[in-house]
Image 1 (tube, rainbow, N blue to C red):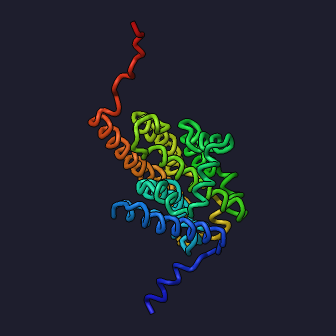
Image 2: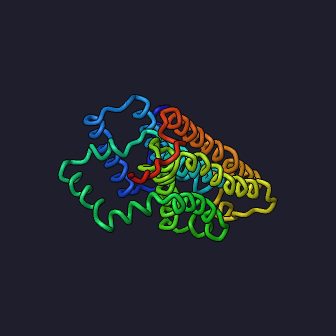
Image 3: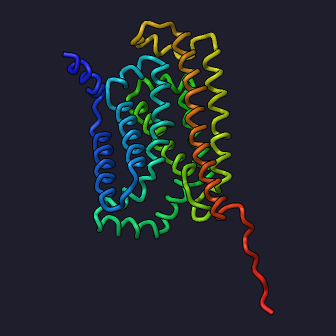
Length: 282
């Protein structure tokens, strides 16, 4: 009987065929790719931990509680925006998933990447200014009370909100966890260390403001009916603290990984060296 009760939590609150296809396709590419490109067990664990955490947050009964408790909503976004994408990108899945593509698809992808639209798309998705700005913006903008109100009532806005934080989280941690020198990496090793400090600050301030505001900023959760017997003030305080402390600690983890990568590059003489100057021929 107990396992039946546990299985109830795995039932989607709102089923999404698109989401199922995306998760199934990503899993298929990773499994297929690791047969070609062997990777460490640690990288496999990181990928599947991130993959499972994103799925549980988006497509189980946990989503029901995220729609009816502010602090659960913030825990959901902690996973969707920070922890899940961080774990997935820590597995460095790009080369593995490319190797999992059928040969014809890999050829088409390589050709597209050499075209102007392909280069433009890559430039936007890896821009060292646009990506961190979006990473912060899409945390703060969804917390504006009026925006939050409509996004929780309209299922289309709700899914847009969740998908937007997942996608920008993957884009951001793809930049920060890059192990290569610059170039070919887009962001310098020093920039990858500094960026989490910069993006962390406004999120901590927003979390503190929400936690210590005495009036109810999000009455929607009372209107819809809270899933757990808890006052609006307590719910809001825990949600603000979730955004303030655990989310910031996740970024600290990313910072430490970036710092380790920078020190590794420096030890190998691949960072921090002066650029060679052109010496005129005599």
